[in-house]
Length: 298
Image (cartoon, rainbow, N blue to C red; front, side):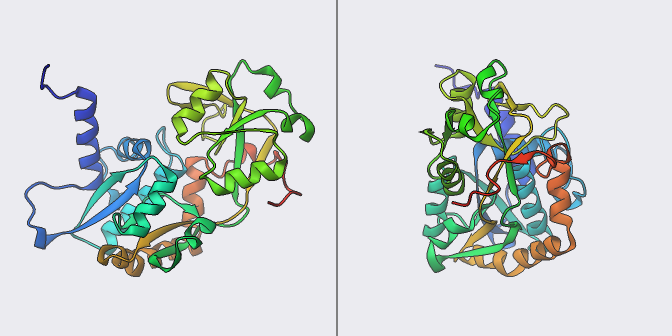
């Protein structure tokens, strides 16, 4: 068997090293290590989004690799670079939402690189330090995405018709799961990874999944080598606010003390909201769409 490194893995390693400011041969006393939990696909797309730019120079948050979770990581790492100079960032790739929370509570990672629901953070107790809400309660509006050839799903307009669709989600994503249950969905498939969800819909095992609207003109969702389309004119609002969080480790406390106040200031000035608008999460193309659960609260 050849020991030659796989070119894609090598490229990913180089991209991630450049994007996180990782250095070789730096004395441990000259830099502090910050372990940031992030899904694999977010880490990879963040590296592509950043490219050759210095993270501290980021001013715009649009582009082909920009999306909500990538932008959250970019905002966090930009403020880490500004508020905690000399910090060496290690992206700890964890694809399970539930395991990410457990690793944070145990102190095996120092900070979350993407936001989680406030209700889930409250369940972790005093061992975690939440950031200000980057997404306020009621502002997390998502689309229902299906395969382009699934005409039955695309024609489901009324609430009773939507309730008959087969929906795939992750029961660990508490807000998504509670929202779908409150909506009265009869067939709710529980899978644990985003890839499984996309393939289930693309291959016809499920009708729809929930996802933020992309910034593309046609609102098509490109994921895992598949294309999904939204049920036009319909959206769902997930209940709850979204936060980053730090562990009660020395590095985590430094982020909570120095970086979270900087993020709070960006929330207050509207800069975080503008970043979400630029990446398409707050999408003007769907602002007039009917929020089908506006009168239904979990």
